[in-house]
Length: 543
Image 1: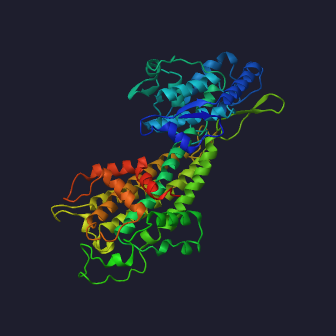
Image 2: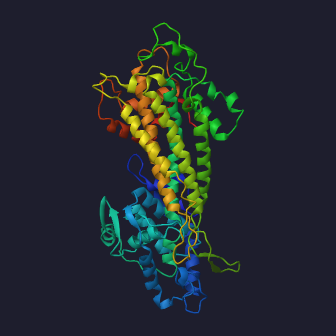
Image 3: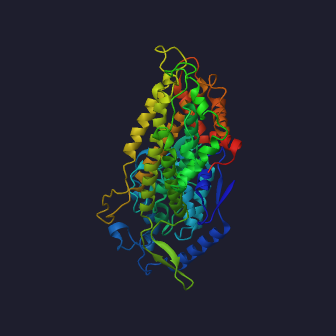
């Protein structure tokens, strides 16, 4: 697949296709759209023809220093050295490097920002960046050190240093971490590139790291929303829940879009279920304190973690809609400084502004973090019910099939998921309201957007594991009562989900085993979208 970058049409899904391999291990190929290349070349030709002299007006980061040195002219004779020193000065990141998908997304999004034709780099610079991306040359970029204004300077400077083949920089190439110059040469490229005026600023300015984190987190959260609805349905059927709470007549009384969408998804997944019918509740489950043939007490209504799922999953859906809207705009925006814009008379002018400020992404990621934290919290509460016979209406304690005492069952899985819930609650504390002045108060308000993106990504990853745990444990519950409840079939969608899980993970029918492997297998099912695919093949696309 080829993704043509024009600075106007890159999508979250496209970014994920370039950042991550498909099931066959293949990445989408990114290249400059021909029209974008022509525009960049024309702008650069104007820069070279009209501004490359020492009588040109002062233009920030073009022929001036940065920060409080903004009024200090940089001579044309020093321009190449200035570009190099600018990258060196800002490569101050610390900590473990970003994962490969984040690095690839950063490279793609920086090139797409250049394609919008506001940054003024050399065309050769953009094409080298994309060539490295497509060749699998990935700069080693420390995760910490950006405050989200003036853009993500520290991480982008490490990207730029590797891109330029600086001897101190590193890259990964075919699974090996190497000096950047060595990696570039092994990949068949010239290690050195001479940066021209504005090139360094174009490479290192802008909130691209924050955006890469945001786009990938939003992409994963969208898949997670559907999976959470499916996991809920499996838990509902395992506990023989009531369906009145999802009735469209009830939902119309409070018509939030996300809430109504979740309720529709639930009823479609559960279409044809008899497990949630009143008659199924008369079946005596293994640990119910009720004699065979004794009718079950009327259910009337379920607890909140079941009944209020549309009112919790729903706002998370609506929050994600908001986040995706902001990310989609940012994907096709120019966020460095200054920008080169049309002067209305056939030429260009350099304008200094604040597009590098990451507050949009900071706030978006805080919203996503809060929404996903609560999605994980309600999923974990359903797990807590599944292991307790008094709350699950008689499912085996700890979902255990083996000898009690000798074996422990799935209570430990639920415990680990509760640890992730607590971790998420700490990470969900908003970071976008925090600001520390820097650079001698030249940057007197910053966004903290990179940290907001990092913690939102961590929360989404945690919730993926929590929802995977719900799939795993609800499937175990359904398998444990499959024989006694065989006269009450599952819904069409939930049966497809259960079948997809069982293709990879057999039920635990002989006591404890290496649950960590199964938790990992369930997580892989969530991240691959395999369970969603199975359900949608059975009932059509979920909303």
